[in-house]
Length: 378
Image (cartoon, rainbow, N blue to C red; front, side, top):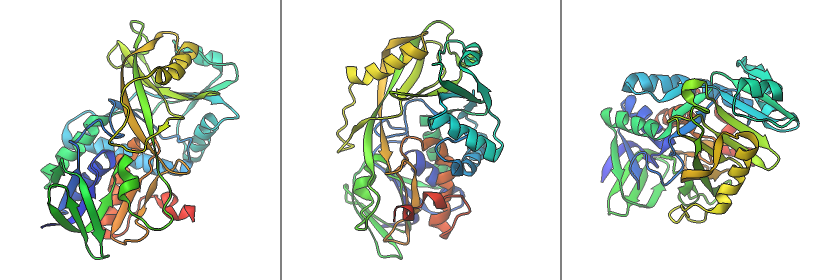
């Protein structure tokens, strides 16, 4: 049996960050995952993710976002890789909605620069977009995009350079804790023990958290990403193209500037079919996946073709209220959880990975995560 200070179970976006922060501070750490770093079976893939600070979901996220930006830049410096690119985020929706009022509230509370536009002003400022008459539009110039798979691989590689060990390719058959140590058993017969365990299993959380208490239900949803052709030069990131998010009557749609000059990635953040088994996900593309996004593009982005050139399927792990679950396990004092990231978590992986590493290594963290605790559901 191998023994460590900490075992990290699930090494995608959040787990790879935990590995890095633990190894960087000298902990003996093991990362366990069934798939290789940067895989496309879970939630952290598909080329890009949006990063922003004027957080409409809840202003309490802003301190974590500021720390996330700092840590992404530090990771770039440590690795020599480009991971975060600032290009701005344009968001549109009605004043009666959640998005635009939420962005303005967070921006006011934390002095985050944003710019406001009427629909016609926005059409002049953002060529290629069309806005309904009842929409308000805000631009956060400091927002941008993260190279999602490269972020995961960079965290993992640097963690290994600092001494982290990996156990890749085997299923987890059991884990247990007696409050002083944890024990992990893999399908290949290996057993490992540690003083603490971090669970960051993404879509596999419902089967791995193992709580007999009234732990919040995590619902896994299938989400489709589409890459559609664009007119030559349209929406290009090299020509002031921005990320975007629209709150519409029929759903919330988002996307990215054209990075390759030929296609643009877009998706629907709302809705999604429930997945019972994350190992058995329908990864084919159906007309029902295309239609809502095609209708959005026809209304608001006429220089994008409505039929996709390629697609990917990822998984959202939804908490009951759409906010993260970052806390100590309710029944095991030396087990820590990062789960239920509800489709908007990846940008936080650098900072929440640091916070979970703090908790596992010392039992405490200065990160502002109290509002993400499990007791809010009591």
